[in-house]
Amino acid sequence: MTGMALYEDYLYARISDDELATEKGVTRQLRDGRDLSARRGGHIAGEFSDNDIAALRGAPRPDFDRLMAAVAAPNPTGVQRRIVCVHTSRLWRNRVERAHGIDTLGKLGIIILCTNGPELDLRTASGRMIAGMLGETDTGESEVKAERVYDAAKERAEEGRANGAVLYGWSRIYEYDRRGKTAGKVIGFRDEEKHAEADVVRWIVDELLAGKSLAAVRDDLNRRRVPAPGAGHRRKRRAKGQAEDGSRWGKTSVKKLAIRPANIGLRIYHRGRPDEALIPAAWPKIVDPDKHDRVVALLTDPSRTIERPGSRQHLLTWGVGECGVCGAHLRVAMRGNSRHGRRQQLYVCEAKGCVGRNLAAVDRYVEHQMVALMRRPDVADLLSGSSAKAAEALTRVTTLRARLTQAANDYADGHIESAQLRIITGRLKPQLQEAEAEAKAHRPSPHLELVMATVGDLAEQRWKSLDLNQRRAVMQAFGVRVVVRPMQRRGPGFDPASVRFLPRSADVAVTAPVTD
Image 1 (cartoon, helix red, strand yellow):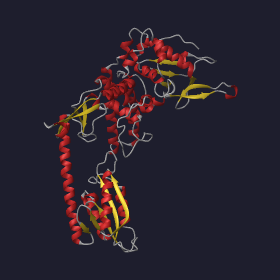
Image 2: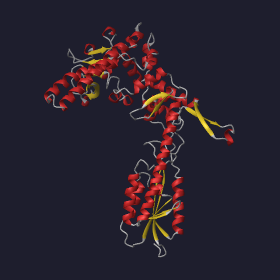
Image 3: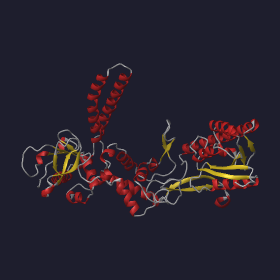
Image 4: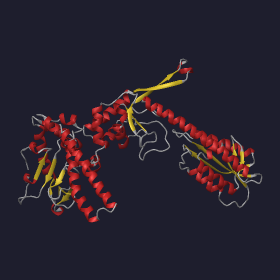
């Protein structure tokens, strides 16, 4: 530090909103702070800035915390310390934080020097009083502004207009007063379909309903270099693996785009709050409502997290194939004598290894059965599902869940013992799982277009043209379960009697020739 400096200055800058992360505001504040410090005999000991962080709600401000730690550090030289900022509103916006800050800085003997406001000596009672009065004004202004923003957002919601930037799939058309676009004032806006982007959204929905996985759709979009939503805009943070310009798609962005209510002309009001609601939007629909309902059902099905469709490598694992002994899922494992080259892939019980069967032979058998099923003349009737049966099963699900909850409450209140709770839970949970499975089995398939394109006389050729995820989608549309049971006979070869092929209903059992 030079001998001429009278003060040790710590510069602080903050901007509440900088969506594009340009940092122009904090850069300007720091520049003005340097100029004022030099004019007022200061030496800059540190510069701190929090960009795109609002202070009214007490959001974490990493550099503000570092500033407070710096001015509280030991001061062996005894030089007077100052905080230089554009205004006290940059330091505090809420009452709790301000009271704590004024008290702390007052005890440290800090002076606040503002480039656009007064100098406040917090060593004195009057300095602390004025800082508090200014701060209360700042908080009041913020709260009044927040009320205006809330009222405006509510009005936009009631009108069905967007609250924020235009969504992917639409373009924004601004409306001006009579002076026109060049000299007039914006008096409103409307969102219209942006055909290129809307086509991408529709393509995503169609591909997912055709049995493609989120990962496959993502890879196709990136391979074709289709710009992702927000591409070209600067952001403070990017998802892991995202390109700097935001041009790459991820599985999450594909899913969010496919299931958002905006696609069918609905907007969410007060997302995540108790009064959250879907209300009609002013923008046009870009996705058929029936397709939207089916893709939402597909992507929000809890079983997707179990079945892991994006990483599927085998036809029957995780959700279609079952162990005929304990009911567990099937997985694939290598078995046999590697010394003599006899190791082979088997479907085995995932839980206990109860059963094991040659993967290729089981797949051939299942494919023969599927082709026979897809050739049936009444195939359309097998795909429709039963809304009445689904509703009945869902009613049982709701009732059983309520009984389990009541049992838990009774135990918590001391009305029943732990042994009684175990008995109740042990009896009700299997019933609940059975009701949930039945409700799912009778729900119409979200992949109807894909399935209907594969049935008929050309079923075998069409089945062979499908990828693994699409074949699974067709099987699930028919509610197919494949149960592998222990072998009844000994010896080599594949025994079809040990594999049960079970479509949705018992009256649709099929037979097909089997080749070893």
